[in-house]
Length: 130
Image (cartoon, rainbow, N blue to C red; front, side, top):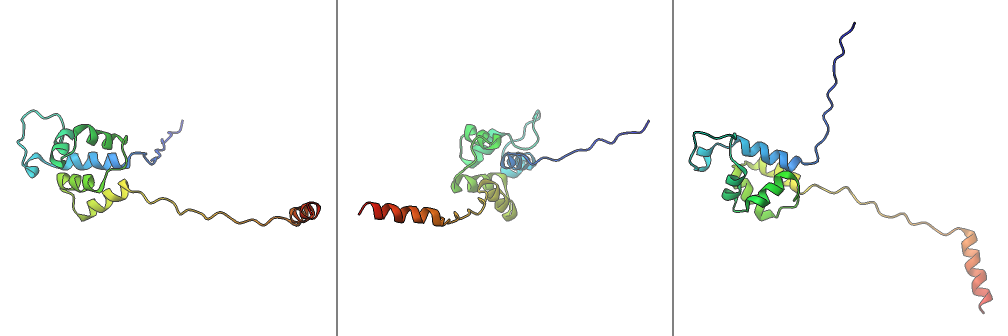
């Protein structure tokens, strides 16, 4: 019997913005942002409510951003989150790229010319209406 090695496929996620926010939130220590630490914390890093408080947005709005239910934060909100999560310039740039994805280039519609049969039909119609 031969062993079968399972293959793991990494699928792109639909909520990269939320995943990035979550990972950054987990990496910030309470002491870095001036919040008192607790002995019995169940989460690593900051809670969502703490990020929202530091960023000056509602906890519900920040939750919607992380969950991907709101994907268009304003520039002001992005700057506030950058400050709250202590992001550097690269982190800021990446956050903006996730929040403002570039849309694919729009193709111009192709102009099609009418065939000679249609042109002849229009000419015939004009002759008959005279």
